[in-house]
Image 1 (cartoon, one colour):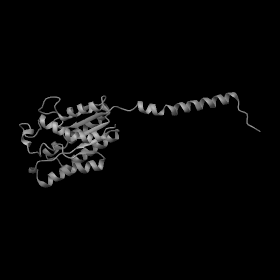
Image 2 (cartoon, helix red, strand yellow):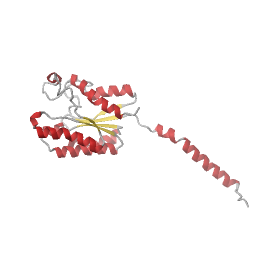
Image 3 (cartoon, one colour):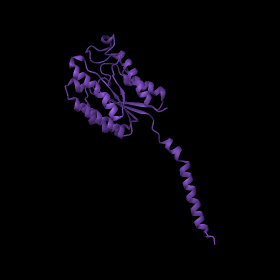
Image 4 (tube, helix red, strand yellow):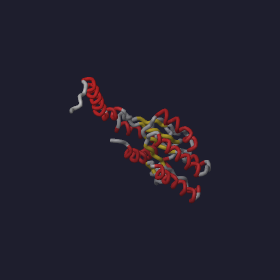
Length: 222
């Protein structure tokens, strides 16, 4: 004997099916609607803060122009501070992530730690913390490596350079091996620095952006 279904029950079942179908049909459009435009957060020191050069001529500004040509809605937040250390960046990172909600984070710090003779273990720990915090916030991360002059001693300079490579591998970050490639190690190095012989001039920043851009470009979604 067949089971009788009341009109009320049948209507309720049909309504349930309609709601479920509508939810499935709208799942893909909703996901696309919530996609965030690319926003790159740069946390660095004077090498990224346009120290001693005209506003808009630094590598971060040059990178933003390239990015905007590629993705009109993209933006860059330059949170770099001259003289900053990895400890300062680590302290500032949580608030920066919460405020800007970046899709990509570029970390360029560590040089001032070395200039102050701070332990490499401390620098390594601070940078690792920054990279992990950025990844936990849902951002892709890019670490910018540096080298120290040979007068710091062979052992120290080798350990300092290797630190960035090891961090990128351990923390799943993209890596620019040497920010000043083609600047500090080029045949025309003297003409690419300001009078203090420490900070790159505007000509050098045009080279620096060519070091950073290809690595960031691979992280960007089509």
